[in-house]
Structure formats: structure tokens, C-alpha cells
Amino acid sequence: MRTLSSSTLGQHAIGIEHYGALYRLKITAGQLILNKQADQQGK
Image 1 (cartoon, one colour):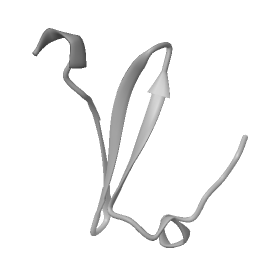
Image 2 (cartoon, rainbow, N blue to C red):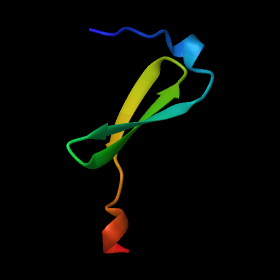
Image 3 (spheres, rainbow, N blue to C red):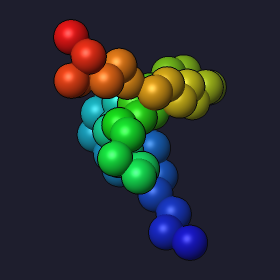
Image 4 (cartoon, rainbow, N blue to C red):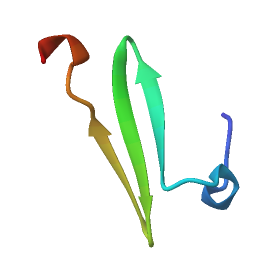
């Protein structure tokens, strides 16, 4: 498993693509919040 320290990311959020869906991992003080992004085709 690849392990990263949140301090090495240099941002407050990262995007993760998983089976064609995009997820946003938001890094806040003491918490990690994972949300599925809205479908871009369904605008």
C-alpha cells in the first residue's frame, strides 16, 4: 500500500479517480472527508 503524509501533499484536497468516478479527499485539521463528486455529464 502506498502511504503519504498529509503534509507532503501541499494542498487541502486531492482528487481520486476510482472506476470512472471522481472522489475528493478533503484534508482538514484533524479530519479526512471523502466525497463523491457530481457526475460531470449530468449537468
